[in-house]
Length: 162
Image: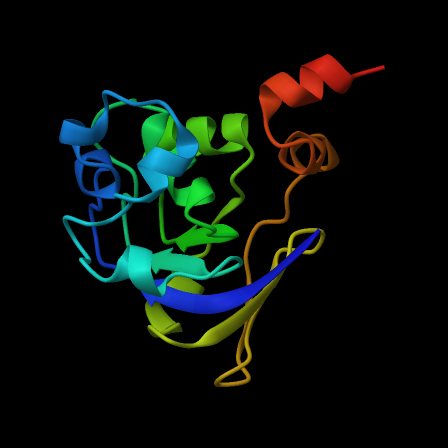
């Protein structure tokens, strides 16, 4: 599994209320949630994000409430992966459960800039900033997590398990 995209960069403590504001939680439709993804922190995110793009953030990405709406909105907006120094634990679990790849890599989080073009190899955990030529070693996904992500989330994984 691999990802490649342009980077949207954010700082510390990006909470679930700015990923998908509570005023939009009356819907669980991924397409509807995607329309409002990140709008309270980045008004231009939805109009600029393209399928495959990548979010890079600093510490504690996804903190706040335990709503699954946040990773659903990110994935439905077209983001192929989130890289952060650290993730809130419940966000980490929710992201994997819905099939959104996320990687903790403090060095990449600090050095990758907004607008950089980044490649990620989920088998090895290698993150390559194509803009600068730097590579970073994130944690590779174990095979069972890759299968969950490639199936589109935990429910699909269970339904397709032989």
